[in-house]
Length: 300
Ligand SMILES: NC(=O)c1ccc[n+]([C@@H]2O[C@H](COP(=O)([O-])OP(=O)(O)OC[C@H]3O[C@@H](n4cnc5c(N)ncnc54)[C@H](OP(=O)(O)O)[C@@H]3O)[C@@H](O)[C@H]2O)c1
Image 1 (cartoon, rainbow, N blue to C red):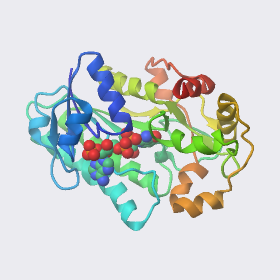
Image 2: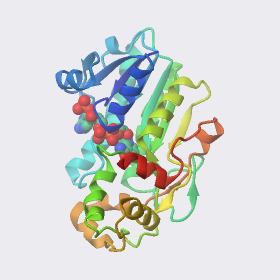
Image 3: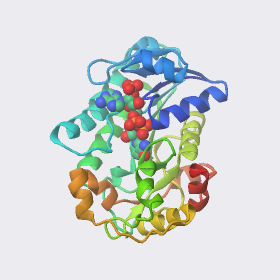
Image 4: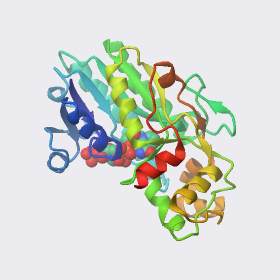
């Protein structure tokens, strides 16, 4: 398969590009910094500034599929400027990708685009799946706009999949390495009361969700990229402490997180009990459905 990947230099993209190449697919990447991306990924790279221009048709025509991962990091203090960058890189950036696809001929058959479980907003203990409607708040609004722009590729006759991604567990980036220092020092523990759900997924399983979405003619629309058994933040802390052989009893108050991260703290203090109903219906089998085993594998 010939696959073009945006955001291939990121946490998810690096693993996905590696997996695509390992199975013999031909990968091209789009990056704001093509020299660096070429060096890091070892694949041909075209320059693309998602906010400023349509994606280059030369990188899209004649390809079988596109995976869209590029976007300003959500895991940073939300200021007016960072909120704008987070939203615009998803909304305008995805619109510019689809504009490039519109101009390309022949076009790829499928677009698999990242989205996030933030789509659902806060739902407390309630189980949410792909049939649940969008929530309120900044991230939910970003995800709605992001999915709307990606779904416009369906009007071009493409199959579109939006992967509503949970908290990716990976040793090289994302949330887990940030959690580890206090836990290793024996001062880790539940955050903001710990009752909120943490919709985790092992990075390897998320890459396999992307591969399944690329390959499966039945995969379309929203799919949750989360493990089948989300746990509360308290339970996650307990399991992480157990895997590290450290106590995990020192609570972190919500106010401390808010002081550090501003409104971004809501990503940790709210959480979603999201389950992957669509992937399971489509026959996807998780390699890492058990949290202890997933943590042991990631931290090995
Ligand atoms: N990791 C998670 O836990 C998680 C959870 C939910 C959703 N997601 C979503 O999944 C996608 C991939 O996640 P990730 O963790 O792999 O992302 P990432 O590592 O933060 O970044 C992905 C890539 O996006 C490009 N990028 C960064 N800032 C940009 C900007 N201001 N304008 C344009 N491009 C920019 C960069 O590529 P270049 O420098 O090569 O251009 C970067 O390597 C993201 O859209 C993310 O929101 C991730």
